Image 1 (cartoon, rainbow over the protein chains, first blue to last red):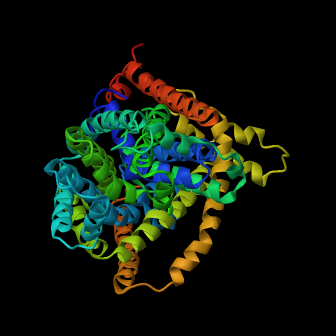
Image 2 (cartoon, each protein chain N blue to C red):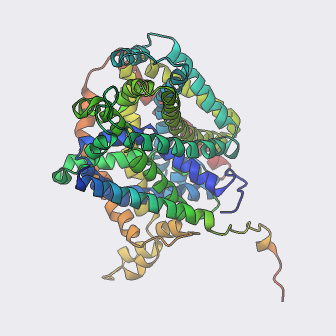
Length: 524
Length: 47
């Protein structure tokens, strides 16, 4: 990649930091350690890394490739990237997921992000000083039940901040935030991690050394790797941590030109996310919380696998006990979570802005404010009710990702990916498809302009193993889908379901209108 | 810390850190590609 790209990114490092920032989220620090404890401790890393190699990296290659391919057609969102790849008229409607998911996830994610912003403020203001553990937990409970106006105020500040940064464009907004936010996030993570594992037990302080927590997290229960559920949990964690199946990677990559590398960029951004998750993510919340609360209390708190309770309701009290350094630690911890959150939520806005710009000529700055307005409206039920929040999280933040990823890999490897030679071979009487297998458009798309040699092993993985993996994850999710679809919920829960269906239908209508406009202007 | 936990943590941390560092170093150290010349294809071929 050249030093500057005219369409969007200012520099290659900026792109990689933005892509890594897109992947690094609150889950790297909260969900990963909780999942590891629930699924075999240190042994969880084995299925986790296998899933990273067989599903995570291949899907990163696929999404980067699809994005760059779409850029050739001046398309930066998945409906018309899919349309360009699949040719058949229905593919663009599968691509709707790549806009739908971003809007729906941003609607609740920005609220979660605003918690980190407000907790950073409370840490500096000394709100938690002198509070007991029960009082901090009650404060957290009161906050999420809207017992004060602060959640709404911080949520609106957060929405405004996201929208304003997006309105500044890729290089002027998103990239600048990534260049500041990612190095700070890693620095804060290192300081807190070293503090966490060097924690010493003392009569009036921690009851355990930090290494006790580290030992608990990393002590392997190898029998767990034979459990199907552990593998599904590992695949799920890889999926969420890399922001796969969202459509945001496609959008970022679509601003590259067709001769620029994607293989090394994808590797670098993907592994940077792994560093933050596996190294930094395992050094902070578990060593510190077990140091002060003990193994039993922490095990109970992480049951459910989210780690949110420890992050927001427990750590503030522990930091408050650290005196002056506690204020800095609180600011670093919640600042780190905020940077992790905002670099992800910014990535959710760009496909929407790209779609509006490409197909309706709406300038990116105006598109950003439209996006901000939509997530404000959709975010209201998520702020008002945990039921609505959970519906958005489950349908858009979990199921839609898996469906989208399954569709995109089939499209890439089996529809776009088959060469004309191969199609001819299938009609012929030849026994072996050697000639036909020699060149595949999908593989060419990944390796074009590559600054590293992509192992041929990934060719087989992308074509057979990753789709199979995703199929298994999807089938494993079916009982949960049936259960969630048929269970009753509150009025807010039903409102959330209605809004999600309406949002998807509305985007389909816009895609239909855009396709008619594109046909009349003979875009393809 | 128990030996299996210690070994696993050190092996995984060092592997992930080294691989991450290697790819990022490679990004930083590769020479920048020249700017594409959009007029190149239109240039007349010299005989």
